[in-house]
Length: 125
Image (cartoon, rainbow, N blue to C red; front, side, top):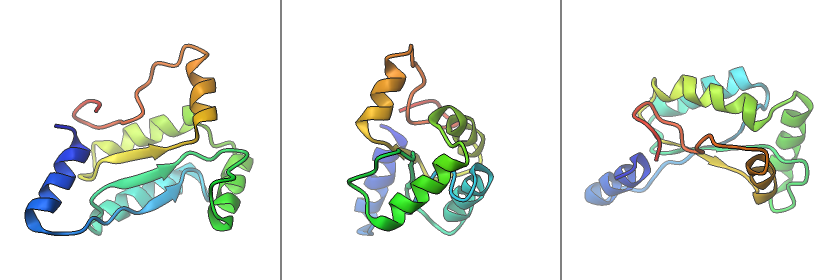
């Protein structure tokens, strides 16, 4: 069972709803993103969703679109985000989920991309 499955199974057993905060990676910086993840976990987040910024986020609303633009202007990328997630995953309880569009993931896969998208201290899921 993955950490995400375990989180939802526990919630179902307790008849509770999930708290799943969402942060755009790199807004305002990757260092702050790491601190936001840790704080969300400390305050009881069940799962933490991290949005990988994309240059054409048509499916997102204006707030997330502006955050993505700011993050991209600061150089946020999947390759810069993964070490941040690996660094915090061992210090938090909540599983991390990376949300991305298909285009950046597809482009990364086409250049020998072999890093899993779910990073945890106990392995990948």
